[in-house]
Length: 124
Image (cartoon, rainbow, N blue to C red; front, side):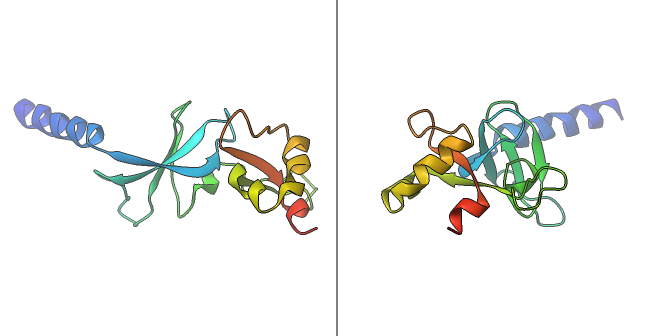
């Protein structure tokens, strides 16, 4: 019995180390790190949802989208008009006017590749 448990534990460790991750255009709500999505090696749960993980703090979640970890959809209590959204700074090539909107949320294009913006700023 003990040998069987050790073998199962060894196989579990092996699968975890064989996981392959890709960067998502989302920022962790807890630490500001980039969100990763598991694409191989146990990438989806039994329900079919992918596993998301912060590259910096390691927080993980299984969800249909990275919203469980990132700023997308977050709003302050009672202020539904201030909903946040993660966006890559590459959008500034087509919409340079959004740079001030990123800055309002404390995101500067030179520091990272993805920032946070108020969704209401996108509708202007």
